[in-house]
Image (tube, rainbow, N blue to C red):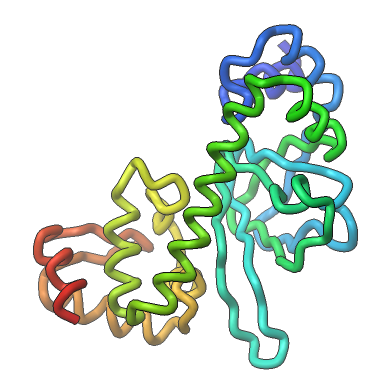
Length: 230
């Protein structure tokens, strides 16, 4: 089996391609391009995302906003295997003012964006997988906006640590594994030293342990209680 055959076959294990009919899989293969990106690459400049749509096969890509005046960064998503982008451009055809950076070497499936629009129009089974994913993205952004408005940084950090262990949370489960404190800060809309201060406090209370970019929960009940007490 060639490398190309291997990646096209295994791509159908990824959402939104799971369970697609063989004829549809064959058509998708004709338009699939395999792309690799290195850690640290800032990708998808100019109008690339208005022409192509991507599904991550392996690795991590950060989607974020950056204030060029003060350098402050807000991470919106960390996309992983099975995630796809840019869904906003796919739906409305307009440029999307966000940035992308590879934070873990990744393999991507690249499709002409007009072909993906055609899939949405022609194949109900593709729709059934695609639109629930869009809804999850919308819920994630709603929660992010609410958290930034209603909760302190300490509360948002605790919530993030708890969500990191929740398999039902598509965009948060196991998201902290391997992230630097700077990247955790970007998820929370704060800076590294603030995150480190709050992590130190939680560790001193024996609620968590932090080693080698891994956060272990030692007392989940007390951690949950702190959200309402802060």
